[in-house]
Length: 124
Image (spheres, rainbow, N blue to C red):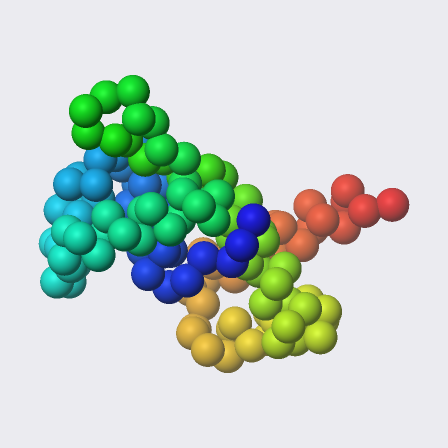
């Protein structure tokens, strides 16, 4: 699967939140956040279908689009790509960069510790 652009990620976020949606529904959700042209959303969804990012159900008059992958799968793919391209494969550098970019809450830090503990237990 190809890497989604920023605009495509915005559309995917709508589909992950709403579930299967028409172009009109996606457009309306995006327009609540910032100006968006219906024709631009339609064109992006057509491109995303060609790229395999979304699937289109043409069985009804208004086509319904759904994300091809769950949010978590796309996040893993993008994180892995970022890890390799920007951080040279170093998970430590990625985490340091993320924590330096935005201060984590106590709850987030506790969750990160739990994830690391689980990872260590599951690793051979």
